[in-house]
Length: 107
Image (tube, rainbow, N blue to C red; front, side, top):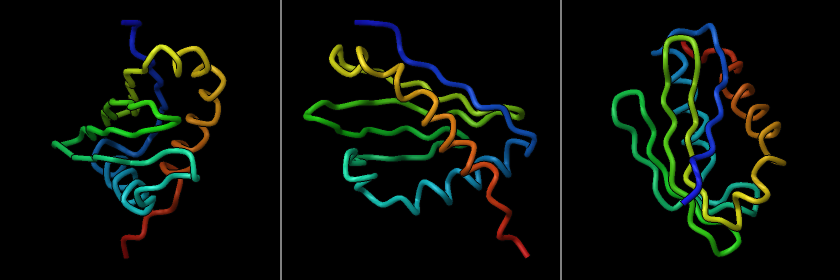
């Protein structure tokens, strides 16, 4: 099996606020993401999201670790998806940054 795909996204929010924003954003996605990905499982354990999605008849598992100054996405990709994954890295970074930059809804 190939090495996992790892993406890091820096932030200045602190771990708790970054985790809150990601959790809120991800919970709002629903199970069908962009008509391409089907979110089959998501589970938060402390500041780590464990997930499983399916796309083009392939299953992808991974985790998102929320750290003090960065978010680290690690995904185990089947061979077929690994061949095209590099193309999607800018979009993954962009979407994660948008989730992190959304203003806080705390009053």
